[in-house]
Image 1 (spheres, helix red, strand yellow):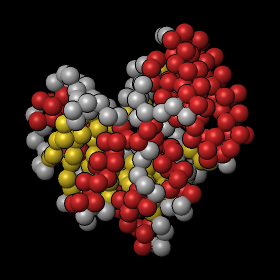
Image 2 (cartoon, one colour):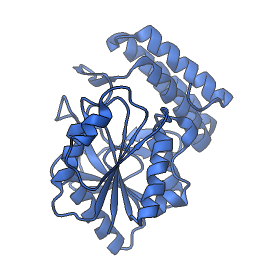
Image 3 (cartoon, helix red, strand yellow):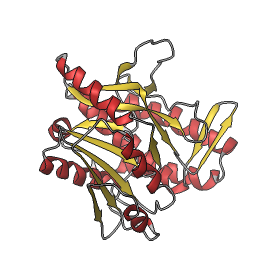
Length: 301
C-alpha cells in the first residue's frame, strides 16, 4: 500500500529538517514517498531539505508562492500518479511523534475492514510550546464548527467532522471524489472546508488520540486565563476571516454567516485587544476579509 507524505514549505529553513526527520520514525511502514512542494522560498529551505537523508524524496520548486491549496492539489495529483492509497499532510512546522503515521494507517485499514467509508483520519495535534494543550477537533452543528467534547470519551479513535490538515491521513479516492482542496482560498480554512465537503459526501473522518503530532501554530503562543492564545501574522487574519465567512455562509446559510460575525469575528477582535501584539492591524485585516468574502473576492491578495 503506497503512501505519499506531502509537506508544503515556504521560508521554513528553521523547522523543515525537524519535520522531515520525524518522517523517519515509522519503521513498520514501507512504500512511502515524501514530496516537498516549496512555494518559492527566499531563505535556505531547499538546502535544508537536501541535507536530510530521506529516500525517496522529491522536491518541486514553484516559481512563485501559489499558496497551500494549489500545492495540496499538486500533491493529490502526484499521489494518483504513484498509485498511492493515502496522502499524509504535514506543515513545515510540525513534528510527528514516534509511529504517528503508523497509528493512523493501521486504524484506517481497520475501519475499512469494518465497512467504513474512510475519508480521513486525523492526528492528535498538540502545542509545541505547551505540550499538554491539545488542539481539539471539531463537529459541525449545521451552522457552525464547535470544539468536540472528547474529555469523557474512553475511545481511542473518535468520529469527528474536522480537524487540522497537518497530521491528517487522507484517502486519495475520497479527495478525488470531492474535487480536492479549494484553490481560490489560497491559505487558511482550506482543511475545514474540504472536510465538511467530505462529510457531506458521506466520507467518514476520525480523530486518533494516540497518533500525536506537535505543531508550532502562529507566531505567538502563550497561556492566558482564557486558555492557550495563538496569534498569527496580521495578514493571515484576512484569509481566515474571508474564507471562513464564505465557507460557513455557503454550507450553513445566513444563520451561520450571522453567527460567525457576531461570535467569532467580534469575539476574536476582543481577544486581539486583550492579548494581541498588533490588534489594530490584525482587526483591520479581519474586517477586510469579511467584506471580500461577502463580495466574492478570492485568490491571493
